[in-house]
Length: 254
Length: 254
Image (tube, rainbow over all chains, first blue to last red; front, side, top):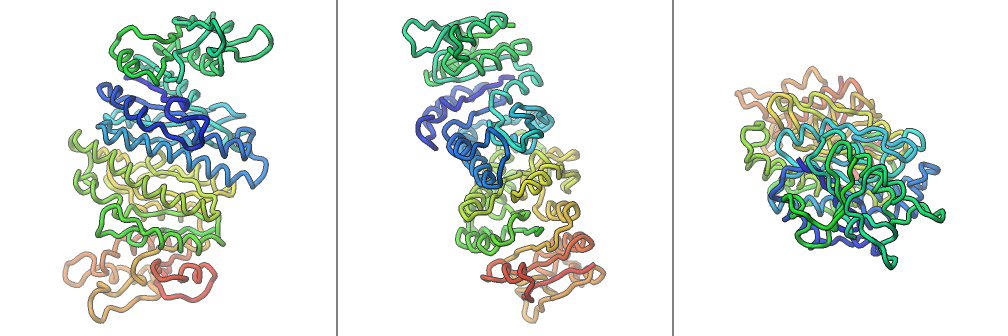
C-alpha cells in the first residue's frame, strides 16, 4: 500500500486562483495507476487560498461574515477534488472521495482527530480513498484549516504504507531556500538532523523555502513508513520511485 | 428550522442521464433563501441511476467489477451535488456538503446509522448542511444505495423541524397512480389511513405511482415534524408553504 500526496504546488498554479494543472494530474495518475488501490491526499493549492485568506479562516471563527468564506472555500476545494476524481476514474483507478469535513476535527489549527474507519473500509473493498486539505471545524477556535500534510501524518501512522511520497514542485528538501545560489538538495535527512535543515541561522524560521512544515510532517511519518519528497513536475520520477528505482529526491529516515 | 428534500424527479430529468434542471433549482433556491439556514437533502435522479443499475449496486457487492460502478456513481452524484452547492452559495445560502458515504452505514439496503454530529455542528454555526442519496457501505451486503428518503427520516427524527417538505414532480400523494383517469389528490393523510393509499387492491404494491416508499417515509416522520409533499415544479408553491400559506399538496398527520 502506498500513500501519495499531490501537493497543491504541483496540481495547481499557486500564483493564479482556480488554475488546475490538468496535464500534470493526468500524467501523475498514469504513473500511479499500476500501484492502485492506494491512498491519495491532495492539497488545496490555488483553489483554497483565495477565500481562506480573504475571510481569515485560518484564524478561526470571529464573525458570521466568515461563514460565506467557509462555504466558498469548501465548494472550491471540492471543485478541485472533483476534477482529480474524474481523471482518476477515467483512468481506471476506482477512487472514492472522503472529504475531511465530516471525519476530522481540528484543535487550535492542528488536526486533533481523524476517523479512519471509512478509509479502512474503502481500502478493504479494493477502492482508493482520496482526501484533501480543507476548512474544517475546530474545537477551540470554531473552524480552521486542516492541511493535507496533517492528513498525511494521520494516515501514515494508521496504515504504515510501504512508501509515503510527497510530490512537490521542487526536487526535494534543500539546505537553504532552493532559490538561493549554492542551495544543495539533501538526499537523506535523518530525523535528528532535521532541526538544522528546518531552522534558520538568522531568525527566519523556514530557510528551506516553505519546507519546514513539510519536513516536520515527514519526520513524524519516518517511524511508520519510508517517506520521500520528490518533484511531481518531472515526468517519470514518481513511477520510478514506486518501481523501487533510485530517483532524485529527499528521503527522511528515523 | 426546515428540512427540505429536492426530489430527483424535480432537479433532474429522470428519463435522460445526467440532465440537470438548473432553472428549476435556481428558482427553488430563491424560494428557500429567506428561510436559511436550513437542512437540504437531494435525490440522485438521473445522475445516480445509470451506473447503479448497470453495475447492480442496489443488490450489494458481488464482484470486483462493480467497484468501477461504485466509484462512478459516487462521482456522478457529487457532480450533481456540486451543481446544487454552486447555486446555493451564489444565492447567499452558506451551504456545506455532507456526503453520506463517510457518516452513514446501511444494513441490507436500509439506513442503519447516520452520524448526525457533523449536521449539528454545521447548523449550530449558522451554516446549511446538504446531503444526498448515494452509494454507501452496507454491513450485510458490502454496499447498497442510501436513498435521500432514508436520510430525511433520520434527520427529521433528530432535528424535529418545524416543517419537513418533500418536493416532487406531482402535486402530492394520490389515491391511485396520478396518470390514471379520476386519480384524486389526498390533501391530508393520517398515518393509519396510509396503508390503503400505499397498497394496491390487486397485488400491485405501489398504486400511487412510485409513491408508496415516500409515503412510508412521511408516516415515519409525522410524529416528529409537520410533513408535506408538494410539487416542486410549480413556481411559488414552496415559498408559500414555508410562509405558512395554504397550498396544494399532501400533508401526512400522525
